[in-house]
Structure formats: C-alpha cells, structure tokens
Image 1 (cartoon, rainbow, N blue to C red):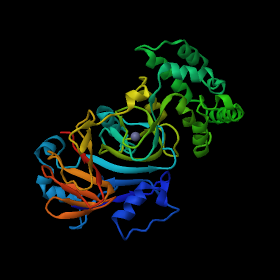
Image 2: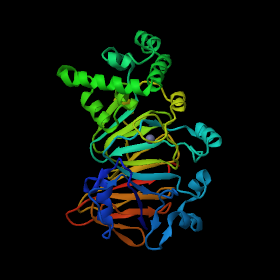
Image 3: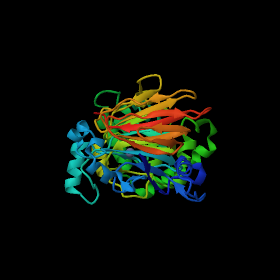
Length: 403
Ligand SMILES: [Zn+2]
C-alpha cells in the first residue's frame, strides 16, 4: 500500500531542489510544488504522532489501520512491541550542522521520562542507523586519545580556557581502560566553560589559522571555520578536535548506539531509529541543551573511524542488510537491475520501503508504480515482486523490525 508521508521543513535542511527529500516528494507526488527558498530537511515514514503516514488508497492513517488489521504486524512483532510499527524511518537532507547530541539507553530514558516528562516525552531508547545517500559528513564518537592530545598541544587558544589541572592530567595520560576518566574531565571543562571566553578563544584560533596555511589541514581549519560560520562562538565548534570526523561515501553507514556522541554535518542519508524523540544536546543548536546530563551519560571510549563504520551483510545477489544490535529495527537495501525481476525476502515484521532510484513496478496484490520517493507499507510475512521498467533499474531501502 502506497503511503503519503510528512515532510519536515526544519531550518537546517537543504534548500528546494538541492534536497533529496524535495526530489523524492516531487517525483512521488505530481501535485507537490517545491519552493526553491524553503528547507526540505526530513521525510518521515511510520506512525510517530509528529508525522504519521497515511495510506493513500484508503485515506486512513497507518497507525489506525494496523489496530484493525493485526495480521499486518504479525505475531513476533506484536509479542515484542505490541500493535505498533516500533521504528521511525527517515530521509534526511542536511545543509547545516545538527546539534552535538547523544541518546539515552532504555533505562536512562525511562528515568528521564519519569523525572522530566516535559523534556523527555517518551520512555524509549533511540538507537540510530544512518546510511549515506550522497557524500555525508558527521562527527561521531571520541577520537583515539593521542589524536585529542595532539590537538590540545597545538591549540593554546583552547587549553587556555580549560581547567589547567584537567589538561595536565589528560596530556600525561596513556591510552588505557581508564582513559575515559581523564577525557571526561577535560571535555567537561570545555563544555562548562564561560560562553564569552569560548567565543573569544574561537575567534583568536580562527584568526591565527587563517594566516598559518601550513597547519590549516592538520587543525581542521576548513571544517571548524564552516561550523563557526553556521554557529558563531558556539562551543560545539571545538567538537571536531575531540570527535572523529567521518566522510561517508554513498552506501556507507554508521550505527549510533546509546550515549555515543554524534553530530551530522552535511549530506543526504537514510535514517532508521527506534520510535523515540529523546535527544540530549550540547552544542551547535539553538534548541535546549542539557550539558550536565550529557556529560554524565556520554560514552567516553575512544574509537577509530574504521570502528565506527557499520557494515551490512549480504543476503543474496540483490539485497544486503544492516542489522544493529537492537530488536527495534534493521534496514535492507535492495537493487534490481534492468531485465531482472526480484521477490523480496519474507519477513516476520511489517516493512516500510522507499524507492530511492529507478522506475518499474512493485507488486504484492496490486501493482504500484515504483519511482523515486514512493513509499510503501508491506504487511508482515508478505512479499513484493519488483520489476524495473525496460532500460531502468530499481533501488529501494526497506526498514523492518529486527525480530
Ligand atoms: Zn542522533
């Protein structure tokens, strides 16, 4: 069943036809008009109340439909999650950095929701998977200790505003199981620094790097300057010196488990997450920040970029699956070449599918015209037959429960 979906015009989205979200919308819906000045940030697929999908042919919300059609969910998902689509599936088109953030684990989320229901509106965890559709930049996880130490040694503008003791302890530290404690102290010192001091130190750093061409690339000048243009004086502009800077190629993915710090910087991606809105922010945002809580929860382990890339498993010649270590969701990528036809694997879970390129037909009981941006709901234990048009191919992403 084809779905109509909600598009979110958040300020950080790519503008008009530059946005993959806008391209999908205009290709799927002939009546849609794209405003070239407007940001098209997110496309939401699922049953979340802030952007619920509608079943086109029935003109009924997917969330309502599944209540009356339990077979759509299937017994395995119903047992684990109740009558629900327990994940939210999205396309993101990012022009401007999103906040430095982390998400609570299940236990922390239950606690936060109980104590601060206005800030943390649901008791669920929010693991996330992002798969690049275009070249995609993100900050993710803390860097290896030596890299952070190296940065600090070359950044007197930064260390001047940090507690001297935390800097000295951190610089003397060797990578070990205890490294997190020293990193936590020095990072906390940064995040709790006086705002005016942070802004002044950033300005003097950028003034210096502008003239020092030889150190510009090792000290990430282009990136920090760009963040500073988007968020002048914001403490998050220092985040690249602490966190890994990843540049994903289309098809590469990262999985963001509980408490892993991250910030998306630019590009388009497919994103899947548990059905939750629990975000704890600490910079690069005009939204509410909860710095003490973030500092307390963060995963202070060091990661290398290789560590953070999340690889899919091949299922057959046409499909591969990213299966994160959570039951809430997994994402399948399906590709069918011209002249071929493919039956999707039967899953114990309901699916949301989005066509990302090519044209053809997608058939369960009734054929649907597949073209970029078309979103389908497939009941549990059912199969789609995908047939590209002559001379075309079909590429889809399918979100399912990982049960
Ligand atoms: Zn996130």
